[in-house]
Image 1: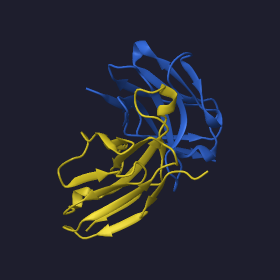
Image 2 (image 1 turned 60 degrees about the vertical axis):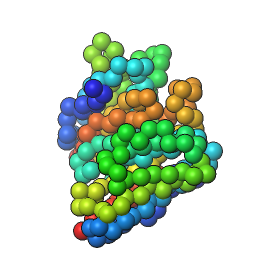
Image 3 (image 1 turned 135 degrees about the vertical axis):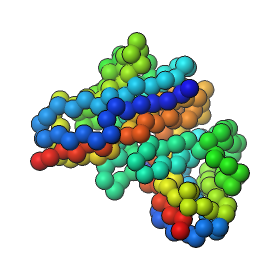
Image 4 (image 1 turned 90 degrees about the horizontal axis):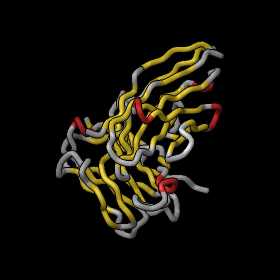
Length: 111
Length: 119
């Protein structure tokens, strides 16, 4: 079955702490992976994407993610979070055109 | 340039009424997608179109839900005889090319969503 699992539902960090959000997927086809972010009151925006090539992809605002095929994982990382990173983060896999999303991780960054 | 727009942004309706939700994709985008997001969950696929052709409607929960894109641009998602369990955020997205094209063109751009509340 096609699915995406995000390990943490709610993460609370202080500013300057490092961030890693887990994402595991289950999909048998060609893997295209995404991280989307939804800031409070705004719509879903693409943070970064993986289609092929270098498994370490860099996105906007200092975020990066690493595709590890053997672990079916695509974890999101940021070395030092800011208060403005407070948002909900969604991992997704492209499954034949449609996106399958994880349940989301709410990140709260304390100033 | 203009992004994906959706209207209305908020819709409150009574159980049993029909509702129509509109999506205006980015100009020139071939593919248009509808998702539904319940509180505390990720978006869940409903259906998608390439141009005016509905390619996949496997995510529509039952026959009360239907969608169309008659001219290959604006799309309408219609829910007939609404029920309280239909309450959710309905999201629309568009992408430049359809599935099967160069993968990088499959990135989906989302609109602000329509928050539907069924009383």
